[in-house]
Length: 180
Image (cartoon, rainbow, N blue to C red; front, side):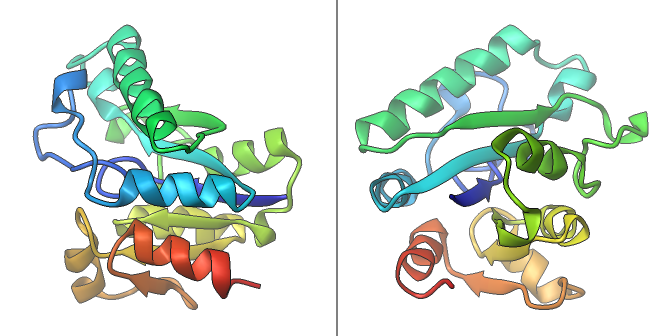
């Protein structure tokens, strides 16, 4: 199984410093939905791993998050793609949980549930915490320059071996035609 883990905000959809708090605020990044469709058709299993501290901060509830994800699933499906699961951390940053990226909890849970070795998994993210989560778990990191990606690249300190692409479409192209 070829498993790809995707961060949500800044990779699939536009990010917001005010958080994505409603389905109306969820706006796909140009090319991201088509990239997911192409990866699906190429046989990849796609899973989203996302920090959603807006829940822990009391800004949204799980029902609203589910509505946002329903919109995302429908948009992906419309482009011929499929997301096999969405894993999220609902905790605030100071909660001390093991699932909030950069902790590897979400990544390890995904690998366990899909019965794959993390070392065979890639994760696409736009922030250092995404890259740290997959690297700590033993997988392979991909940074995209969308969302916070350009700032993340400039700041440096990326995990060894991090691949860098302009966007999810470019990363998907590499994964489909060049990944081992």
